[in-house]
Length: 230
Image 1 (cartoon, one colour):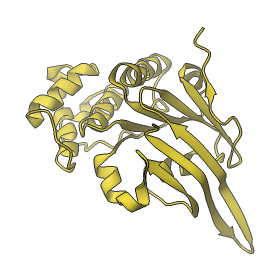
Image 2: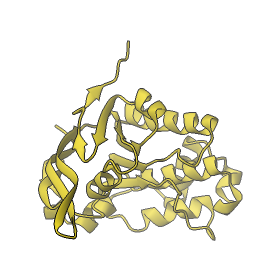
Image 3: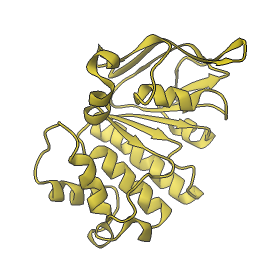
C-alpha cells in the first residue's frame, strides 16, 4: 500500500478576472523504500506541490492521503508533527543552538514514541549521517553548508517518521556535497525503508531517483517514470 497518495489535486489563484491554475488535476503515488524526484523548472508548480503534501497549504479540490487516510481528516498539524520530516534548502536550523540541540527540539514536539533517550538518539542520528560528536556540540552556524544540511536531515529523521520531504536540498551546495547528500537520501530510502520525496530542478538528482515525476505548467506530464537501474 502507498504511504502517500495524491488524487486529482487542483490549486489555483485569481488573477484579475481570470483563474490561474498552478496545479491541474495532479495525481501521484509514493511508496516506502523508494527515492522520488519531483522535477520542474521555476514556475512549474513543484513548490506548491511540496506545500500541499507537507500540509503547509491545502488544495482547492482533490485529496491527499497518508496511509489511506485523508490528511485533512487526520489534521494538518497532527500530520506535520507526527508523520513527515521536512528538509529545507536553507536548512532552517536555529543558529544559537548546537547541532544536537536542533535535533532534540524536533523530538520535543512529536507524539511519536522514541526508541530511547533524546540526547542519545540525537547523537546517534548525527553520527549516522556523518556529523562527529565534536561537531554535534558546536553551534550550527559554525558548521559548513553541507554539515548543516546533514543536521537538517538528522532533525527530519528524529521524530521516527516514514516520509521525508526535501525542498531543493542541494541547492546551496557544491557538486561534491550534492553527491554526498543525495547518497544519504538514497540510503535512507533503500536501507531504512523511508519514502523520500525531493522537489528539485536538478537533472542529476532526477537521474538518481527510483521514480521521477515531472511537472510542467501545473501538469504532471510523466506520471511517474521508473529509473533505469540496468
